[in-house]
Amino acid sequence: MPFVCPVHKEHSVDFHSFCLPLHELLQTITILFFFFSSLQEVTASSRHYVDRLFDLDPQKVLQGVIDMKNAVIGNNKQKANLIVLGAVPRLLYLLQQETSSTELRTECAVVLGSLAMGTENNVKSLLDCHIIPALLQGLLSPDLKFIEACLRCLRTIFISPVTPEDLLYTDATVISHLMALLSRSRYTQEYICQIFSHCCKGPDHQTILFNHGAVQNIAHLLVSTSYKVRMQALKCFSVLAFENPQVSMTLVNVSVDGELLPQIFVKMLQRDKPIEMQLTSAKCLTSMCRAGAIRTDDSCIVLKTLPCLVRMCSKERLLEERVEGAETLAYLIETDVELQRIASITDHLIVMLADYFKYPSSVSAITDIKRLDHDLKHAHELRQAAFKLYASLGANDEDIRKKPILESGAIELLCSLTQSENLALRVNGIWALMNMAFQAEQKIKSDILRGLSTEQLFQLLSDSDVNVLMKTLGLLRNLLSTRPHIDHIMSTHGKQIMQAVTLILEGEHNIEVKEQTLCILANIADGTTAKELIMTNDDILQKIKYYMSHSNAKLQLAAMFCISNLIWNEEEGSQERQDKLRDMGIVDILHKLSQSSDPNLCDK
Image: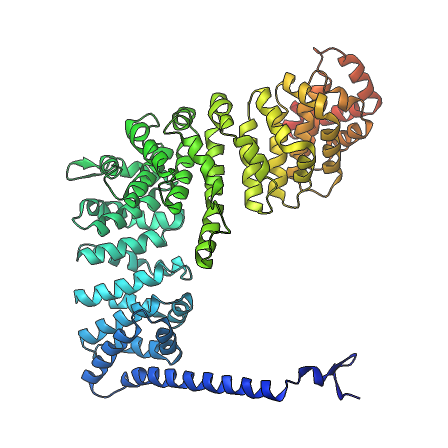
């Protein structure tokens, strides 16, 4: 009998199952021995660098820091070892000591910056040692080389995704001091602008930087002789102006060397400029246009910005550039019909977008795992960007939806992608179809319904994600608009649609979902023949009656729209419908609602 030992009261474990054969046990012990021996050697080697930081001779300490700097360059393992052995607190101590020579303090900042260039865990360790306050304190030094080293290290830490941006804004004097340091050298300009562009996330940060004179202090850097300075200044304006009318309206009137900023941005859009510069300039002009600072029919938008962004969608561009170009173009044209029309006929844009869904062309041919991971990630991003641009292109204009997008096979493509296991793809696919169906002609609506199929429509309406459900209901609502279209669609899909509506109204859904569903019923009730599908369905009528007395005013109002469309006096059969609804007690509810204190309800 094997020896058993109780683990818990009701369980026992067979110790034999954990025993390794003797040769395997010896092999394991040998591997562990060599592992710890090698680790001991590495640790001993690294310990030597740390020990030298505590030498009583300042020159030996300085040489130790310089040697450490050379040892960690490109060596992540060495960086990790030094952090584990406690090098960071000692380096920070030396950096902050006024008795330390400026050269030593500068070298300490350089080593800390090199450690920050390692893994994200390295950055976390540095943050845990409160490196940011120490480096910010270092910026008060009169020595420019030391300031630049501190800024370079701060830049590296702040561009890491693990660093909270708010750490830059905890002390109001920091931003003012950084603005003052912009004039010291091209390196201070490059690093500070890069810090600002990475730490400006949202309107609160934009306001702080704007109020501290970011526009005035950074504008002249756009004409710097240093490309890196120009580029970082441009990125600053890109994030400052995004969805910010105050900044955008200010930028449009700022001039540098007699040239207005929009003119400078347009020069940076030229084909001979680096792609990074073209894209970022286009983003600046796009934000200013969307904020109303530049008219949508201005030549700098129509003839410069829009064509530049279309160029960025070309398959000759890098994947990241194509994603950014499509997303920025979608944002630029989103609310303007004329820009949508121009974009749709510029450089075969619609055909280019179709290529976004063909990447990567052959996953099996890619043997490099890192490359495969990169390509699959960007394949997803490409599709997302294409969805956004398709939605913007077809958002407001029937002709754009009708011809180029349809001819590219977009509807079939979008319908197939609503079946994706990826939630984001399903949401964006149905969202693009919803926009395409808005005020569309009947053929387009029929193509969408045919492409989706009744089964897929039901699948989307029963999706566990509320965003998918809401977008699908929005699609149905757009499909069921204008009487001829309502009657046609309900004549072919009426039974299935009414079944779906019933299931949703009976299900456990939030107010917004129920409201959208009742609005679909109101649209059906506006049809000439389609309304009979409601009038002959007592179950649906009872549900409308129930929601007329619901505690939520939105649902009451949506239910009343249904009834209003059913009993409209000027339509044939209205008297018979009114009689039936009176017999059901619905007219009595209408009388009660006419006495409601809610003006939206009583007016209806």
